[in-house]
Image (cartoon, rainbow, N blue to C red):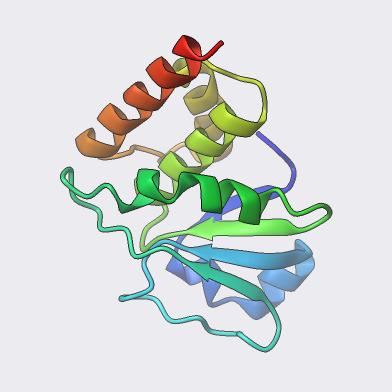
Length: 140
């Protein structure tokens, strides 16, 4: 996985010293209704109100914008949701598949799981990631 993307939970998002130690510059909050932007004066935030339900499509609907946010040169990004298990890893997998020349969902997920072993996107997000993989392969 990219050394520019960090995954975590709401606890990491609230730990200013940890964020500083890892030189985080921006934070993608995938649970803004539950997790506040703790340090808006210090970090650049992007909020995507994605629900951790199989029916929600906000995350994938926002992937182009998310990819642009994460791809800012030299900006290390924390991607978090509540627990850092479903939405944040799914966003990281999608970013890897769309920006790191990796079209394999299985390979992208393995990269994420190597750094976040608890990663487990919900069934709806997994289906959306499979659809993304199919679109990417079709456009090659």
